[in-house]
Length: 127
Image (cartoon, rainbow, N blue to C red; front, side, top):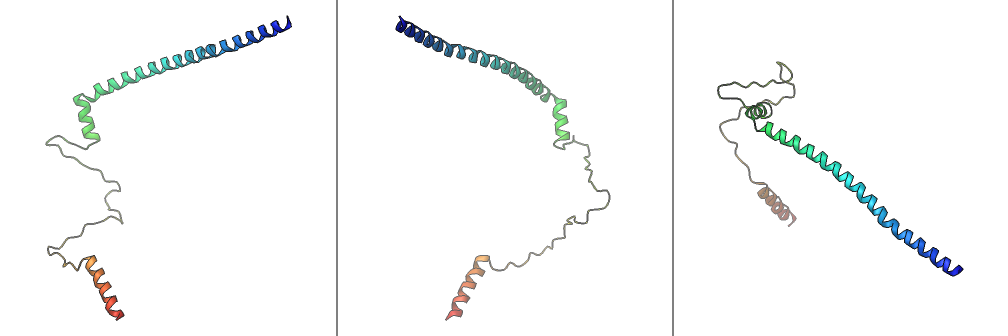
């Protein structure tokens, strides 16, 4: 009888342990389903926000606001002004464009020609 009791006890433990895995999997899936449902709600709210933003961006007033503020555009006949920081005086390190002469400078030989001339003169100096 003792052997039968040991076998029955072992079978009972095996059945109990084999039942634990599906139960654990059930609770894991239930938790994952709850998380996915919450994420679905958050994403639906985000879709609503983006749809409202899209509708607002397609209005003429919003297009004009973006064109004026972000692109610096003006309507025909309007005058655009730019405020330069620093007041009346130009900064000391400001670059002032110089007047370019009408006559182009005479270009010297190209870099590769100067290099070749240097090679030739060094070889002729070795002889």
